[in-house]
Amino acid sequence: MSRLALRGNQELVRKMNESLILNCVREHGPISRAEIARLTGLTTGTVSNLCSGLLERGLIEEVGLGASRGGRKPVMVRLSSSRFALGVQVGVDEVAVLLVSLACEPLRRRAQPLPPGAEPQAVVDLVTRLVGEVLAEAAIGPDQILGVGVSLPATVDADGEFVLYAPNLRWRSAPVGVLLRERLGLPVVLENDANAAAFGEFWCGATRGMPNSVFVYVDYGIGAGFIVGGELYRGRDRVAGELGHTTVDLSGPQCHCGNRGCLGTLASGLSVMRRVWEARQGPPVAAPVDLLAQGLRLDDLIQAARSGDALVQSAIREAATYLGVGLANLINLYNPQALVLGGKLALEGPEYWETATTAATQRLYPAFRNQVGVIPSALGPDAPGIGVAALVMRPLFQPVPLPVGA
Ligand SMILES: [Zn+2]
Image (cartoon, rainbow, N blue to C red):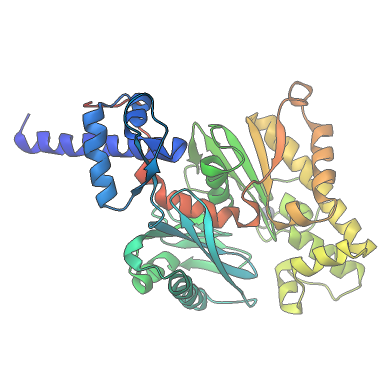
């Protein structure tokens, strides 16, 4: 083996062992170096050596002494509280910027409503301003930020730089990642919101430790994210999980994709808006997303249902019943360890949750009926933003199958 290749291998081994240690600290911290050695199978010398480097780079920190096991009390380490990732959550009517710790906790949040029809450039400007505000407020420098993840209701390109299509934002081929990287001077990666949320729940939420799970996100639109074998499954063209475009009614409402009766036209927040608009005899709309320009907002409808508006309540129940059909289809196809349901309408829409899960249970294949749990998102409405920040941090912790070179 050439000297260069050998050096390359040593560097790779060091990186892998560092990740092993960081992952161990993430899972078990605060933890002593001796305990890290025991759990990872690395020698105490290797752990000590690599921990010094990780301390120097500000990725872990010492937090006092642990309990003695006969000898001196060990110094405990945990993930650093001075390194972060930013999770930017671009929704249909709001942009939020979250400061997320290495331990995946959202520490700060700045948000601003997004006016209907906002162009990509305006969103880039808004995100840039919100990021500046979050950093100033937390007294954090850009050198403490590992990177910026952006979740969007969109399909994105393979490099996570371009929005390919975001129907509810009316964007096509928008270089949002490239523009933001130029403006912020930080690494930026884009991800579909349901995928980001699925990863977030797996990394630090409701499905932590479950390598096969699915996340269904119900907001203005509907999407699903799959975790298969502990990895996000994106499909050949990164469009896997388009649950909103599975057909549930052959002669249902027209969808922007060209088909009729897609789940998104019957079970989403936009479908609730359309039902309420039509029941109140509003003029016909070409696309429910146009109702945003009429001043309709999902938050307001949820509030109206809570205040006893029977029309909105019934529109939400109808949408939830259709979602239940979609959930049953998904579970019947995929048989996951758990299905996490999240997004504003699912979590906050009165009776949405109960109606959807009841409808799903009725349609599940008998063998699954009592086995696959539909569980609520642990990360809440910010799951995409937290998840996309976790995706940015993930390479640091990328677990390796076996310790090497110990
Ligand atoms: Zn469709």
